[in-house]
Length: 297
Length: 94
Image (tube, rainbow over all chains, first blue to last red; front, side, top):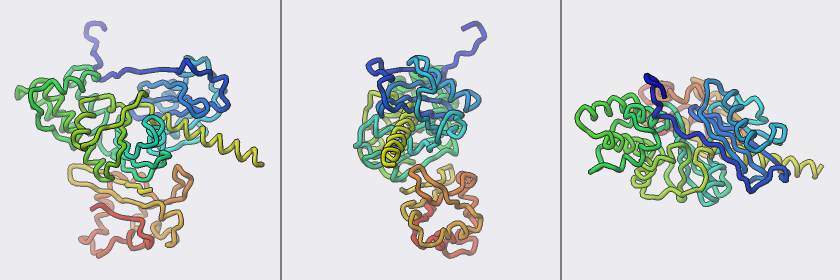
């Protein structure tokens, strides 16, 4: 970083991974899910209905390029070409702008399906804390949505809100969660109705002598209260699962668990890929159905 | 599926819930489409290929204002959308 260059505290870790133990060339059906969100974009490749690889990166200034960049990352790493992918499904905020997608499915259905894979078929309640919206979803044992609620009117309770606080505090976003626990006592939550108000309130608290950690704790608590009020509208049925980037922030997750009185199911997968993974799995099911109809014909 | 369209803001919670399982075998002839004076409802094909009612995207963030005319202060004793939907799929949270 050169002098005068602003450090981007909000910048989260982009991630590209493939499962080296699998060989996509052996697969009968290769499907991809592309989740173009308002803040991040993910591409997931599944081989015969199993996760093979993914790429998670920041969304650029246009959806088609973000979709291409996301899929290209995982294709390059696996030595695959787009033509090798049998079926592609677009999801997320930019789902209708994925130029190489065969179909678009809402992120609500895809997150439920992805969570069912990542957390197991006992998952019934999903909280997706996305970049600029938040969703509470109920699903059945197959990952089919039975009830959902979404709030995309403001950025409170979303990843973007956390990015704003990271920049304000000048603390890397990945450190916010752990640092929110380094306080003598839990502070009152800041405003949870609006990120702009929360930011003003956080500034006021800093001026009043609060430590940065205490302000972060107040913001994490506000975010937890915000999403809990959302999820309580549809009720919490165990098992409970959190998807989206905020699932990586223990400062928010632990506070949500405390407010709800239940623990979120853990997963070995990256919580940000749930939507794209669900889309790729939908693609696999569609291909299986098409194959079955073709055989029947 | 229960689909909740709306939002929560500083002034309250405003959600229209639609029980889409009741839409798939609608016995009211899609009366929601004409029952709402503002034409806020539409029929969509959902992610599971069912034809169901939904609140149009353009109204989802302004329900508190859009529905005001049909609330008791607007002269209605019951909501036109709920009255039109005889299977009882539509509910308001406020």
